Length: 365
Image (cartoon, rainbow, N blue to C red; front, side, top):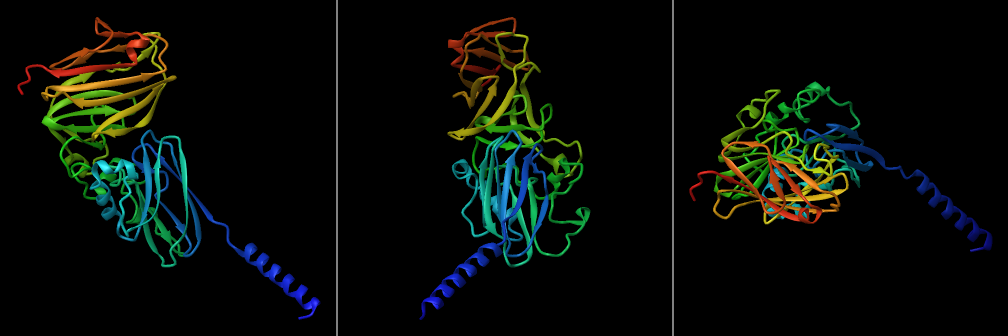
């Protein structure tokens, strides 16, 4: 081969490589948000078959979420597999090992953003995406349409949550939800709509048929009851103002001011919920009040007579106050601080670690 031919060959190779790189399509970017009320801000999106996709999930809610894309028709199968993970779930972002899971974004904590890049299937179809966290998958889902054809009207789309465009509660009626997220013995938790609590309520069922409602919006315990756990009939009927029912007797109900105060006992600090982790299957809630980091682990008293709320607080330099007004047949005591006229006073050193005990009066083991 002559020198001129070698130069031409090299130039041709360079031109072909440049042509390939220039012709390589840029990934289509899809932005989703996890928002309050257990849903994504978009219930569907469309991509062309074989297209490179960059899917980004931003969590603007106050709870952890994930996103799992499944094979067509496999959404509830994957949701049930995630529920069956039980205590193993948090360590793997509640994402089960399954051939029905195509792509996923793991745990996205409040305020965080994560992405996944993949090539869309060449086979046209409807590929569901869903949050597989406990009790989220029944309402928090959507549809990735792999097609170049127009999408059906929202009101006629059978692949998106029922109630889109207004009534978010009615989404609960869209699928057959289990009674609770874990097919296992207590303790277990359920994120649902509860009476006398904000939309970020967390219901927890404990051994000895005790349960409580913790509000992630106000970062406070709302009430405790004995007997059954939850009644879902109203939710299943899809009523717009529906909440789960308490299947038992409430023996402790906190007052509206059941929140820590810092320095000034009359000043309510800024609140930011940071999520929870399971400690021996009991949730430990993590939240921030101004610059304080608070960890609250609620467990069962050994005799089953009530709850022990164990607090760890870091960063305290001022006196903490906790109003303790409540109603019901329960006694409340604290391992530290001084309580007077329904107001608990904690010095910074006392606030580092202490417990609050809520005990049902007249309990018989």
